[in-house]
Image 1 (cartoon, rainbow, N blue to C red):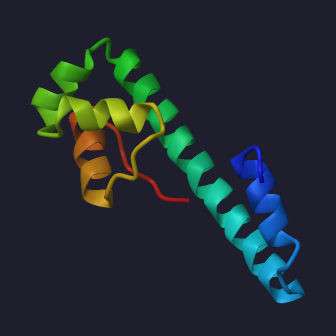
Image 2 (tube, one colour):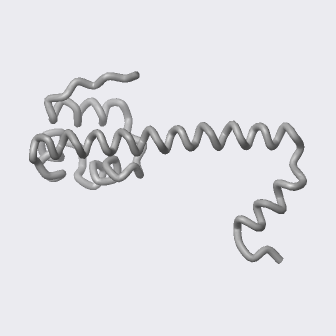
Length: 99
């Protein structure tokens, strides 16, 4: 019996085809890139908010975005819509630029 999820997953992967391994690797790379982008956005938002010397609550009042959502974004645990990010940027007098 597997002792951990990692052991169980490792055993399951042994039976995968080469194509399945390639799909898994590609999906893992995409997921890691998305998480990295969410964390970077959160750090940028927190930096901009701190630069204005305002609390999450004040930013919430200025933007209409719930404080709890701002907290999740800043911690990298949220996947906000472009509309939400645009509202936060406008409230912080920042320009939203997608690269």
